[in-house]
Image (tube, rainbow, N blue to C red):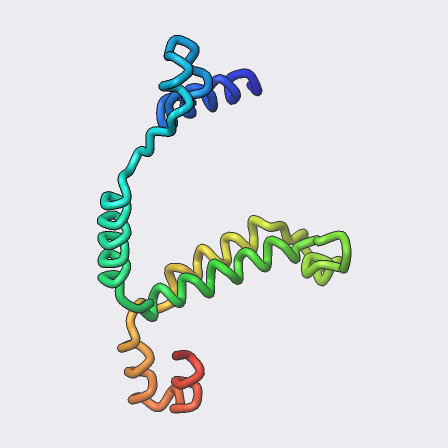
Length: 141
């Protein structure tokens, strides 16, 4: 298995990065030592400008993206603190009860991805109905 991974890595290196000039024994030494830049400075400036324009088109983070980020970070924290061996983890809270594994927490957070509303209109509707007060609304956003 490790041999296959190593051979695949070598193949991908040669495919995407090419053979380094210092290993091209069939070339003259004078042409091997000259560094051939892949991109000219003007090309690099154009690429940088294009990337900055694309980044500006992304806009700010939406409420849904923020919700996904919070759920994802919560899942990572639960995975880390399941049983960290340094301190007692949250899985030790269920000693006498059922066995709680990382997969249980993963299913909880996967369900949260479908339960958390996508748009802010949900929270504004709750506020109009009087279920959520303005202070809670400000804390959410």
